[in-house]
Image 1 (tube, rainbow, N blue to C red):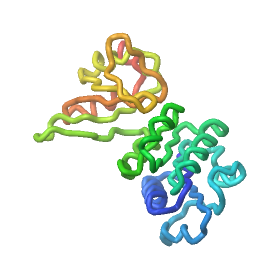
Image 2 (image 1 turned 45 degrees about the vertical axis):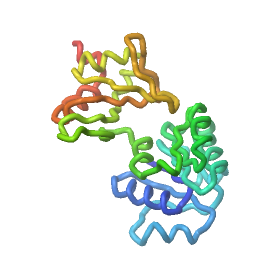
Image 3 (image 1 turned 120 degrees about the vertical axis):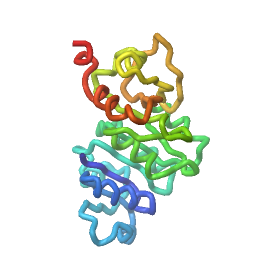
Length: 222
């Protein structure tokens, strides 16, 4: 997929290099051309000099064909403004903003834009929001046999009861993150677009459960 990144500091350059290494096309925006030196000589993506929330600059970076956008400059206001432009004007599906003030992060998440406070930030957390494919382990017990993993289901699971995952996988949905807030599901809770699904499962069952969730739940009942 195509990813646009605003900010070519240590965070942005690391994301750009890792995403390109994973086979994605990348455009990165920064006001300083000198910042692009952090990408190294092997970077094959597009570099765009300018303000990351400017519509023309975003278009030059390929925002109109982008599936993901990360705003990781050194300014909270710039990051959230750029993220909102990407989401609301260009309808980018996966958007995440880096926020320095953790007290403001919750407010912005309620606008529907995932934010990661700098004090909690890791490259893996950003990638988890940008690239939904696959499973990412978030916790495991001392034996390594039980893991808490973030799963990404087929789109047909949205609109279904959360407990349907338990029924068809024999795993346990531990909680859902919805608009930045963790929620323990009950029998009435229905999955919504944008939900992050955290499943407790046996490590040896990961591949089986991934395969089930990658298909429509209708196919599991046929």
